[in-house]
Image (cartoon, rainbow, N blue to C red; front, side, top):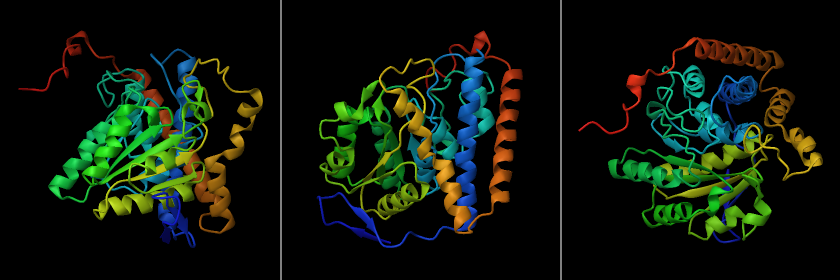
Length: 339
């Protein structure tokens, strides 16, 4: 694969034939995407049944974004997420059972039941945390990238930010600092069409997130976020550059979220026709069609993954429903770092 840097400045394009990906890697990618799909569909049902407290923001329709990027990372790499973070957690390898327990608010959750849907973190897996503050994770991620550079351990840090978060000053400052310090950071901007209820086309003055990000002085790619192969190829390029010490980069993935901003949002800001057409760009259907047609993976293998993902998530729900809530004595724990 070659990288073309002709025009516009710092906005790079991928050229040549797609890289080869091993069947084992592809099967694992499908497993993660299918697990995200089943997990999110199940969370929706459990929320509507009244079993999950707080707000829930689903990642359905964007599975290829998280997985395409995280399949290019290593165990010691870090990611930062958003309020729509379940997909990022699963793609980075967080325990599905621990996640479900956390979303149910149980003491056995990854954060002791204190974070809930919007604040899942797992430092052992390199997940710095979902973040309900829009534009809140880019500064955390460049801190992780600075640590990796200082330690010289070859680590990379990735910030997942929505199109709404791209307009935040924290994001601009983080991109600038990453360029100035030549940090091993990758900014992934998930353009799902709307920042809460406001269209990207209205809120982003430049009309193009990747081009604006490139103006900070780093290479940028814009890809179809419903195409795993496009995202993976872009991630391989940007993560590889960062790991080699060539500085930060940007990937804009374009894939509309299938559901409203949060479960319960009346979604009056987009038309019925748009909502009905969303599933036409199904990342999992695109993936299956490609690997089955080229003979890389068999239908039976993929069907087996479907069954296993359903069983795994069902087990996670059963465990979460039976687990205990945090006791009152946990109220003031984890508030301050030990002295």
